[in-house]
Image (cartoon, rainbow, N blue to C red; front, side, top):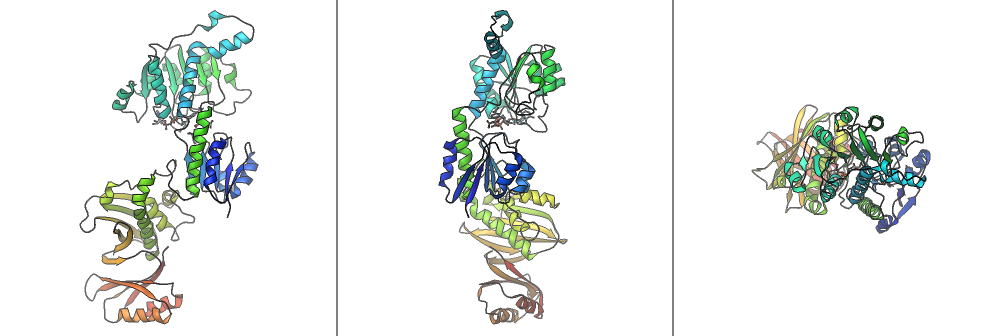
Length: 530
Ligand SMILES: NC(=O)C1=CN([C@@H]2O[C@H](COP(=O)(O)OP(=O)(O)OC[C@H]3O[C@@H](n4cnc5c(N)ncnc54)[C@H](O)[C@@H]3O)[C@@H](O)[C@H]2O)C=CC1
Ligand SMILES: O=C(O)CCC(=O)C(=O)O
């Protein structure tokens, strides 16, 4: 099958060329599609590449039957319905680093512009005026710059502001005192940054917490004559409140690169507000940034379509190639244990506990519960489950999932245990790796066992009495099916026992029925693992 990569926004060809490594792939560039054209084009797309223009809505994701990844050539993913993508098992990747410097430099250009009214002065000169008194600015030297959001871009802005000898206040829930000291800035709370700033710049994503973070109440608490820049996302600053603050002179000047509605509507009141400088979302618009984000996102998409490790997913925990090399047999064990558990104990599933024990607790095993859940939920609890949507599906069916780390292991160097309540009965399956790479099931409930979790398996619960192995083995043999290996386990002599037979292929249903009829057999299950 030919893979289709749909490019819906203007993305540098240098990046798109990175997709050439994919065999059998068609790159379809359709910039500026209407919504209905996008809904049609995305139907058979395996990957969708966008910048900030294309809205990747739930409807777009629902229309896409084969979509595996949405790649965002940039940072902000607020034009993508990430929650819906996650539910549908579609990976969302972005390019977090490529445009940091471009956005920081544009922020600085805007800071200089609000200090010295440069675009307004330019417009006046072009109109034939020479009004030097109208454009008396202020210096940055010694002024206080408040930075809300001290991530990649906020940090680069701070470093540049230091060169201008500004006093810098930073607010970010993740900013530590140590990091602030290292950067030569003062860590404050939100209110202090807003109250004390001569210049204020925002560098957070747009979220429910940051929408209208700078509102009329915030403007009221600011210094008179404050200057404001938003080169992050429209909506972080309340545009109506900003217009009012500019009108009354509370804000001396402001600059916006981003807007609540983009493109800016023709009748936007922002166009009439005094001392307001507007740029059309140019923060990332440098040759360098556009090449970097395009290359980064195209490489990520190519990795995903080729089933290779990738790092910039916004809806999956990061897993480096090195981590993946170390962890991949453990992840495989997790998926196999989940599948084994789901097939052996079918019923109403509740309260899954995933315990990592021994040496593995030293690894970042954040991904592991996804593989266990994928294996488990695929056994009739959900359709189309993958690593992206497994936790969302679990939450959707009301399944509580807990991850536990147990540093000490009495028996195994490392182990993984999956325990769940199935129709009110708690069951546990434990696995480990032999020689660090070969998955084995080593415990089923209280039974010790040693079996490979692959292929066709016949599993019985029966009385521990003479002749059981022979009778069951004969029924399988008479059906012409070869037994590759056999494991038995019991808790006490003459009590209940288990038998796990790895067979070369599935036995017919009537053979399973006949095994169930053997005197002493309590339950029989035929499992088919990958
Ligand atoms: N104008 C443009 O063309 C561009 C705009 N952007 C925007 O800039 C934003 C920031 O980009 P980066 O610095 O690369 O992201 P980042 O993820 O490195 O930094 C964002 C920071 O905001 C902080 N934050 C989140 N919620 C907060 C809150 N309520 N209060 C204070 N801080 C909060 C986070 O802790 C984080 O440190 C992006 O989300 C994007 O929307 C990014 C690139 C270009
Ligand atoms: O793609 C663009 O030009 C916008 C960049 C941006 O806003 C982002 O990376 O968040």
